Structure formats: structure tokens, C-alpha cells
Image (tube, rainbow, N blue to C red; front, side, top):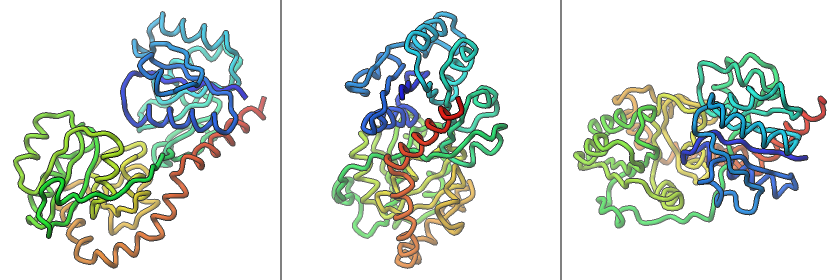
Length: 334
């Protein structure tokens, strides 16, 4: 089986992380894997067959489409796996001229999914974002998480936080979809016993607003290992997003055995009870955090089975095996 992963952009985020981890894991399963992506990702894919192609120029760019067509035509891949919206749009434009089967992964909420519906099969990273797809050939495969041997650290000492504090962690780029502004307002409503460690960067005004609060620590952008150490060492994780395709922070928090409260995004409701789901309002998020703390031992016990389920559902091995089953199903229809 010859498979190629196609990345359409040049950003560094969950989409790129997912593609890198999936490609390496498929290789370990004996799949002949190639990657078409921007040259900046070459080192991330190691010794995999990396084919440089700058698709960041625009999905309708004639030169980019022609270069992609030449690569796909010359290599005769069995499966072309287009990751996300842009790559799918570009590959579907070329579909009439190709003999390969096309699998597309929908990573986020999109109003226009027509290109995905023209693929031979669609993988969605949550049930919620695939609800309106007009195709029966789809399946949810949760993103796998590569969990190293993460150790707890002393957050009180590291960030000079009062010892009696209940530490809540939140992680993400400072973009509007994450609604950290609402989370910051929630901590204005909480007393000084609650302390938020906010990991991320991207909006100077938001960062300035957060740093004005005595019970909020902003770390800036830090590497993945340090982020996981903080997440594992926190008493609680908080997610305040108003939309998510798949929440890496949610999955990583559960795999690190850190409980959380969250807004209703992605498939979070399929894993945690409603008592831990907050409305997208500062007061409700604050109330959920206080409520968790007030019965923290009982609530931690509730999370025991949730942690076990997450370790099963969000493993890289589970993601890879489910993806392979889809590839084989698509090829069997030839």
C-alpha cells in the first residue's frame, strides 16, 4: 500500500502535529508513506519520503496545482490522504485526472464541505464536526497523542504561587476561538485561592489583560514537554473555547490524569458528565471551577474511568489502526 499525506499550509499547529505523528506511525505499521508539504517540515518527517511542494500559495494557484498534479501523477499512489480543508480542495480539483483513491480528514468546523463530500472517504476528528456532511462514507477517528514519560513538577515554587492555591491550567494560542478573554473574566470572579496558569501567546492585549490579575500567571509560548509537565501538575484544566474540531488540550489533560471543566466543544460531552460542562459565560465557568473544588475528592473519583477511556481512545496506536482499516476499506472498493 502506497500512501501520501498532503499538507496544504505552512503553519505550526495541531493539524501539522497530527500529520507528522500519523505518518511516522503508519511507517512503523509497514505502510509505504510519502509526504507532500512545505519545505519547512522536512526535518519533522525524518527519513520518510518527503516531497517538497509549497501549497501555501493559495488553493487556486495554477502553479501550485500543476506542481501537485505532476507529483501525484508521477508517483501513482494507492491512497492520497488530504489533511484538512485546503489540501482537500486542491486534491479534489485534480481528482478527474488521477487514479488514486482520495481520503480526506476534516479537522475543524466548516460551512462549505463540498470538497470533502467528493472524496472517496472522509475522516472526521470528532462526531460533532461531521454531523452535516452529506456522505455516508465517513468515520470519526480521534487524533492520537504521543505521551512521553511526563513527570510532575512543583508549580508553586516554579511560578511563586501561594501554597494554598488551587491551580487551574489552560493552554492554547491566543486566538478568538479559544475565548481566553472569558476565562480571564471568570478568574476575576474567583477569589485569590484559585490561580490560573495560562500557557500561550499571540495577542499582546490579551496577555496584558491577564497579567493585570494577581491570580493569573502567563507563561508565553513554551515547548510541548514543558506544557505537559504543567498540565500534569495542575489541579484542574479549563477549556473556554467556543469552537474546536478536536481539542488536543482536552485529550492530553485526560491522558495525563488531570480533570477538567470545559465548554461544549468537539466530542467532549461524550467523555465527561454535564456537571463539568460550562456555558460560554465567565460566571458559569467560575461556578464550575468552584463546584469542582468544593467536592474535589468525589469529583476526582468520577474521573478515574474517564482517564482510562481516554488512554484507549486517544492513543496513536488506536488512531493508526482505525486509519489503516479505512484505507483497506477504500481500496477494497476498487
